[in-house]
Length: 161
Image (cartoon, rainbow, N blue to C red; front, side, top):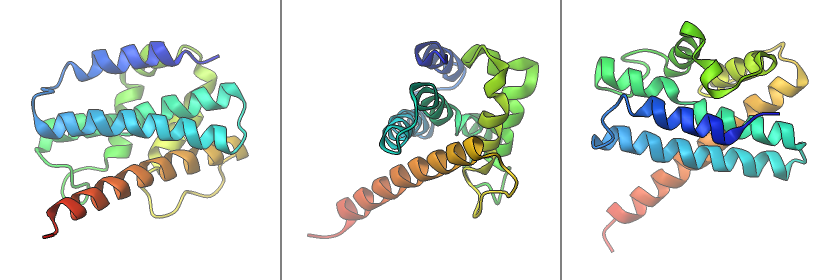
């Protein structure tokens, strides 16, 4: 079984390597936590078992891990000008087996890596097994839900009354 609390502590330790006083870093931390919650909500809503609910939540926690390094290296979040943050995130998790800090059992690795690498793509790649495809859809939708909600709120705040 996946231990979400362990993954959360590992995430908190990881982001300590970045300046949380930087508004962009703070924004990504807040976004990540919300996407993890939304991933859990979607997984429960579609009737996933507890193991897959926890897996969805961990994927939500890890989906933008590449953003922190992207910001450090390029001072920019735009993938088309810098690097594909999803691929960078997968590379970071694979380096020195960092994924083990978040999830002990390697049986989840392929699903985690595939879901993360597909979350920001126009279309999810073909050939994924059913469970991996489900997780790729969950993280894609949770991420879009939060981004769209945040953009709508900003638009509302910025519009003259």
